Length: 448
Image (spheres, rainbow, N blue to C red):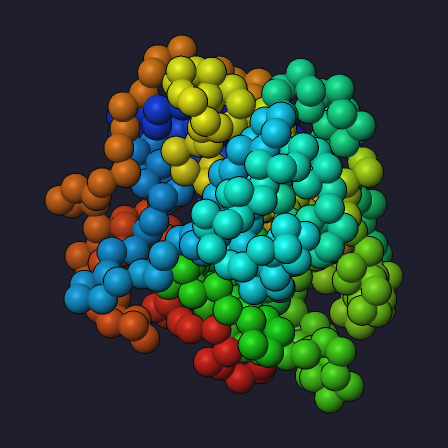
């Protein structure tokens, strides 16, 4: 997709696409995923060339089928099972005037929705209560209570909505003015170009973790920090590949001191804090630069950075409801309920775009242009996808086939597993992970 190359100032001609099949959707989901993966490869080889690691940029290939499969689940447990993806209450519900999706995977989000509906945690009771509400009123009430929900809107309704209009006017990747130039500190190798790069990961669930997992595949040292007690067991085995995972409470003085020590040693900060949320903890961009001059920052939110919903919590499945994707899918499939994308494509594509943006910023730092900041959002990635309708119906399934997996078993804390082969191939630069997936809070918050 040319829009991706334009947003990242890449040529768009360096990736060779292989593999076949299209995920079934009204929109070009496989094209979005493959193009986002390809942008990572192209940004990587440009960084390698500018860093003097290679004389000529290596060939970049993307397997479109594998890119689609990675957006489903990259890991196959051997003798154990992944936890359910969804909480028992989460899902689609019919209101008096339409549809709404409740996202209740996190306990406090579940409690907020149940408090608004004044019912017990039983799906039938929730459904009965939801039928007594108008969709927009229920969405507002749950959000105001600290929960997350999204009423289904059409594409026309979203474009007319103040936040939809704001997101549509935002760039796909917003690059902020760089700070004063500080020479990069990591020293990569031709076969591991990001070796020595210290990445501090403050992201949750999917998009941000996909970006840091991708960087770890080329040698970056990724340290993920979560608050004490945090858990997202249904995705941890998939997205902590190649990372060490620690816990710190940024409201505790001693933990803040440890966090600031980590910041001083970091090269790249990746986070998913909503606008002003990190600043409220005392870590606005200027404060971060004061702690670590030259720190590169890549961040995302759900609903964009300039509209009235910029501070709203959200997830891929909710953004699909808000921006018209689920409504368009329902009409395309002639279904009787909202029809989301076959995979969490907004999360995964945004994650790859974040990784590519990080590499672009690193390249600029190598060129002496200074530390920069990149901002992305799920809603803006959705606008890109909605600009590309898919003419063919698509029949690519998500079942793994013989030969899809890496040869060696991955020894995880939960048991052995098989991992998909990388969808991205950079000639002479194998994408591989030095660490298996890890449970949250199992590492010390230190650089190694």
